[in-house]
Length: 120
Image: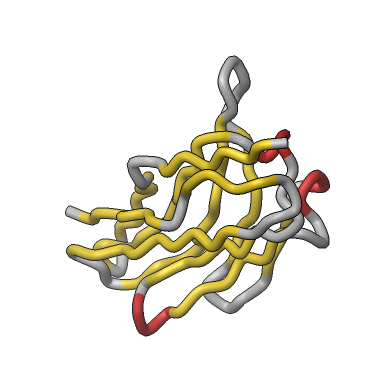
């Protein structure tokens, strides 16, 4: 079994910054892509940023230039540095990871979510 534990959410004023962390633990052979998604009230969950095991990244257009995703492979941890936050960034943020639990089996796992609220 694999667990993803997120931390770092909270309440911040517009223009402020937050850093989210997500640590994976359990029966891990290797981790492929890691990503952050978010879901605002009444909206579908959307991809915010993704990072490959080799460090390649991609971002939603709405966060390009403001958010940075990174990972520490030694710690099985992914980060999301969020700067210049806007009220429209308010959402529950979820960590996602594609984890090889054996050399032949890969599963997708989700964290429990962390609330980010940006006040105007």
